[in-house]
Image 1 (tube, rainbow, N blue to C red):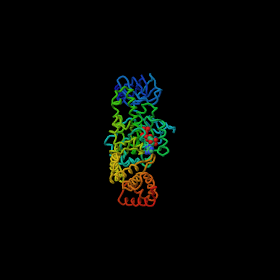
Image 2: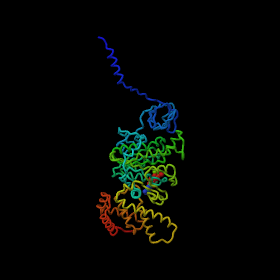
Image 3: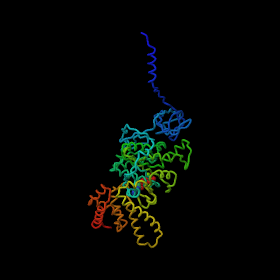
Image 4: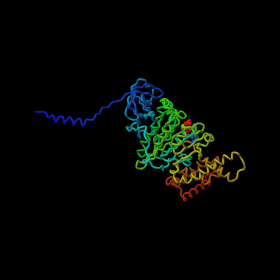
Amino acid sequence: MGVNLADISREIKEQISIFTAKSSVVEAGTVIGVGDGIARIQGLHSAKSGELLTLASGVRAIALNLEADSIGAAIMGSDAQVKEGDIVYGTGRPAEVPVGDAMLGRIVNAIGQAIDNKGIIDTDKTRQIMRTAPGVITRKEVSVPLQTGIKAIDVLVPIGRGQRELIIGDRQTGKTAICIDTIINQKDENVLCIYVAIGQKASTVARIAETLQNANALQYTTIVAATASESVSLQYIAPYVGCAIAEEWMEAGKDVLIIYDDLSKHAVAYRTISLLLRRPPGREAYPGDIFYVHSQLLERAACMSDEYGGGSITALPVIETLEGDISAYISTNVISITDGQIYLETELFNDGVRPAINPGFSVSRVGGAAQVSAMRRISGPLRIELAQYRELASFVQFGSDLSADTLERLNKGERIVEILKQAQFRPMTIEKQVLILYVLTKDHLMDIPLNVVRRFEREFLRFMDNNHGDIVKEIRESNDMTDQMEERIEAAIDEFKRLHWKND
Ligand code: ATP
Ligand code: MG
């Protein structure tokens, strides 16, 4: 039986045509220097920026600087386990973190590992840490309010879901307190929260976790912590890790609030990395791309259009200023990236005006559109009266005979300031805010001595709950204030003042 050569050659040709090479070459490099959380690696010629690298000891790193003869990588973990001569492998994949609902109620480090002694996090979902922000066509305008429960913010600088609002102020002015209160207020708002702690003391982060736990707020919150004792690399990537966790939920159509506390320390961490990588320093020794680093992060906050699920990420970045100087490099950068800022002042804080928000310097460029109509009706006049009061008050310091009109305005202004004060951990529902601000703007507090205004507020709101729950409920459900409703509130105020209130 003769073998048909033609058949054999056809067969061979066929086999060759369907053969696809599946060789995989794992590229390896060598550590040629290590220090301060940064490794210098030689030999990984095809590594990409942002690629995850594995070191022989099992430690991971992220490729940052790609140079002709070497690459600089940020070590994700302790650099004590990395030494010169170690072998490094590229993975061909970008760095990822675990995400998903299993992250709720957990405290993780900057590589997404649990650090709360509650066991490993049971999730098989992961996401890329560094990602480009959603494009314009996938977004829609901010239109739903994010209630902070803090009167001074919800009235004067309202925040909308999907907005980026900067919290800026000197140290110890109540920046973190605003963020934590806002998280606590999301309990019935269906907003998932992420608190990213960057370069803070471990004890501070532990206290924040405890506070959230006690307020039953940890169950819908994830804390991502890169404390001051951890490497600058971890401090640098922590916000991106938090953002990746947020994006998973946003893409599932949920509303997310993320807090970056704070981006000043993040900028310092990035500056340290850049100097270690010998990138040329610019203004205040920050590298030239620090603006890009922050805008890239904050652009990932978004309000997605309905076709893209309708989810949102609201971002509250925090910046610490020195001596109230908001014109420093990092502050001006972040002010220009965000949609407004809440400016906190040491002087106000020390005067007992807490939260120490300076209404003159604080703005919200998009949140007004998201305010509920009952609130919008009140907030416009209040803003103007408060501004007039502040202007008058600065003149009156010089003392002189005051006209009746001036006195009246000063009295009103003092009462506005008094009502906008609010204790920590006491977020107020929007209907209660509307009620007390109604009382204020309609001049029903003018005959109440200043030192008992806050007691009046407490007692009046309790009275409304107990005796006029229907009004409270109606404002909550309609978010509106009709003329007929105003009449009922007027009657209730009259009743309270006549039968329940004593000035002393
Ligand atoms: P740091 O610069 O250290 O991060 P910070 O600006 O974040 O400080 P917080 O830690 O929030 O400030 O607050 C400083 C102190 O002021 C805390 O002791 C806090 O309890 C107190 N505080 C903050 N807000 C209020 C408030 N509304 N009423 C009373 N006390 C407050
Ligand atoms: Mg703080």
